[in-house]
Image (spheres, rainbow, N blue to C red):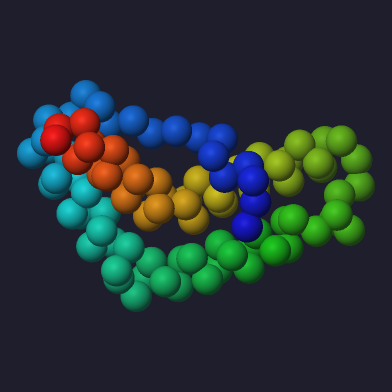
Length: 94
């Protein structure tokens, strides 16, 4: 996808381990659902369209496209970022 996928951070450092385990398992269930797969397919199609320079006519349009792409990448990266955070928490508590 894009290098700008790391522009947003979510931290759950304030959560207890039990709260994070519940949060983690609930999101993992979403990521395994057929609906998530459909959503990702749609967002990836949007990403391809919005990432086309042919649609960018001026700086305002460029800013809009950049913001839209950042929002898409935030959602599309969520499973990977959650897994990274989980591993980081495991390492911190080892």
